[in-house]
Length: 195
View 1 (cartoon, rainbow, N blue to C red):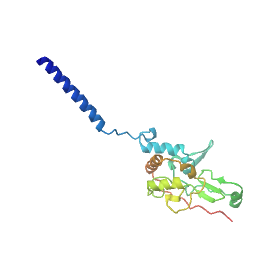
View 2: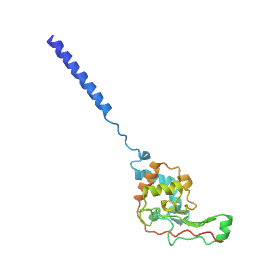
View 3: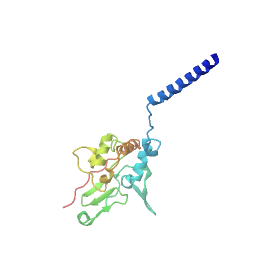
View 4: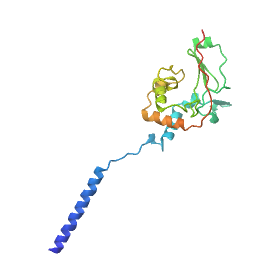
C-alpha cells in the first residue's frame, strides 16, 4: 500500500508540475521580433528601400564615363551640387515642348521651371533636422521639407507613388537617411517658369 501511495503521490506531483508549466506559458505574452522587411535592422531595410525606390537616380550626382553616367559614391544622396551643370537651353521652348535634364541628373527643366534635387543626407543642409513626421508628410503629401502649408514638391519627385509607402517603410527610410554621411550642400531654390 505504501508503494502504491508513493507512486500515486509522484504521479500527482508530476501532473501538477505539468499543469503549472502549461499555465506559465499561457500567462507569458509572446513577443515577436521586428522583421525590418527581412533585413537585420531598420537602417539596412531603409537602405534597400532607398536603393530600389530609385532615390539615387536623382538625388546622387553622377560622373560621366565612357559607359554613361555612374553614381558618384563620394556624394551619395547629396542632391544638386553648386558646381553641377544646369542645362543651357531655351527654357521657354523646353517649358512648351517637353523637358531636359542635366548630365548628372540633378537639375530638371520643364513646364514647372527648373527644379534641383534635394540633399537627403543627415547634414543640417539636408534632412539632419527633420523629424520622421516631416519625411512622412513629404512622401505622402508631397510637401516641401515636410512642412504643412509648404509648396508641393516639383517634378521629377514621384511623391504620388511614394505616398503608398507604409508607416514601417517610411520609418526604415528615415532611420537610414539619418545614418548617412552628412554632406554640407545647400541646394538652390527652384526657378519659376519663364514667361
